[in-house]
Image (cartoon, rainbow, N blue to C red; front, side):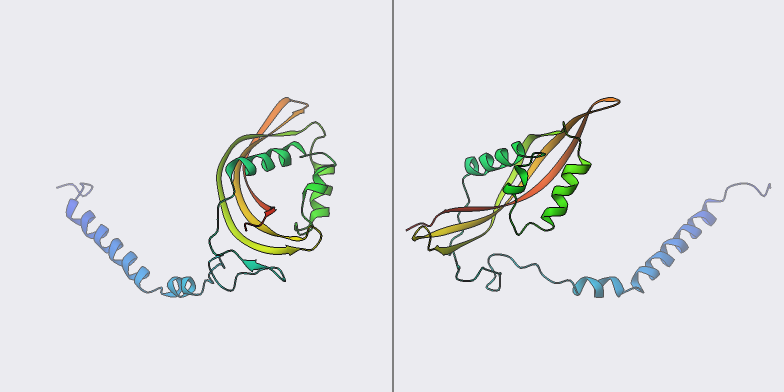
Length: 179
């Protein structure tokens, strides 16, 4: 009987041994579960410790901002993209606003335009009421997350270039407080 003949029983035993060793190694490493339990929860608007500005009071029933209003704001923002007006659109609380504008001015081609392909999801993350002494009435502030499918278009030495992307925009929308 030749020695190089395949013996299914030997192969089956080796497979069982490998599976057994893999199971033992998984059972012997509880560090992954311990690390998972250490994750901190993310504050949400429903939690009482959610951060509010000074003088603000939370809205009891968060109401979604009308889709048409959010779409209008997103379109205005995209129209101002890659223009000097973009800086006035961004909040003073925008992280590293000056650096972002520097990169827009130096790293983005001057003829580049951004187009909205679709607005996927709109979610009101937080709402609160703040007094507005200038207008003499309270305002409702809504923090809204919008997922936007965009496309960047510009010309290069090799021709017309498009770069698709998915972006999450966080909008702060002020409106008159409900009575």
